[in-house]
Image (tube, rainbow, N blue to C red; front, side, top):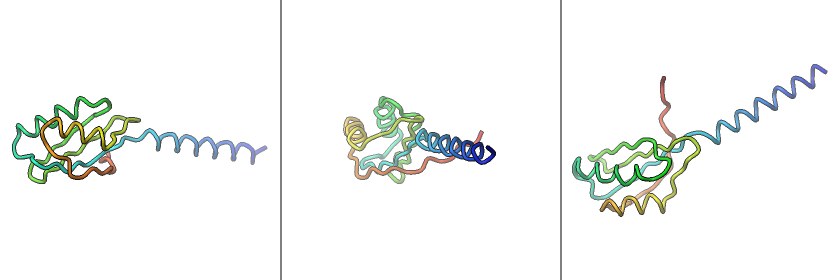
Length: 105
């Protein structure tokens, strides 16, 4: 009986770990051509924030990158990012998923 409970606890632990891994936040790094000023940053933030599930946007004008963090369970596909960047008047050069920074409480 002891072995049964040990296996049950182990299986439950593995299931809970796998569920939390699937619910983790997704983050993306976009390389955007044309970012030159704070007004540019505002324009692209406005278009990206209109996408359902976007939680946080960080624009680095100097490097021409935009980091997008999604809410748990949401994701961003390249076509949607491409459309938002184009609608803001810029060109998407690179789209890559990245590990989101760990948040401290």
